[in-house]
Image 1 (cartoon, rainbow, N blue to C red):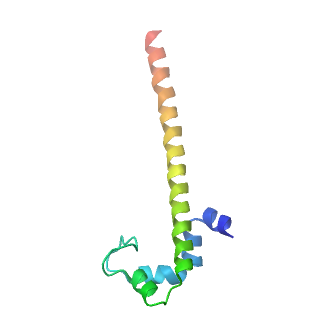
Image 2 (cartoon, one colour; image 1 turned 120 degrees about the vertical axis):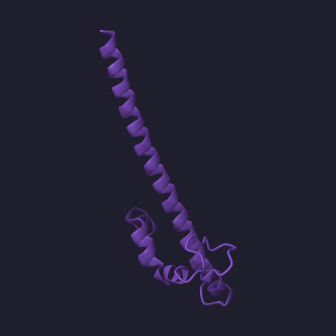
Length: 98
């Protein structure tokens, strides 16, 4: 199940953990990481027992995996683009030599 959610991307995370996503929208700050920020609705729900700790840990783990995949994908795209421009510049240098 986790593998499918990873490849489904952010949508899978939002659907699977809709309760946590709803709580996250109630946080004081939009970029809340749900760790130690003041006004965090997720941390408040955890403290009040309205949200299970293991469920939140699963959410965090999947979120980290998605972030890793996004960085890995972006890096791959970056390297492919870099290689493309390297070939273009090399062809230009060779063209000017002849």
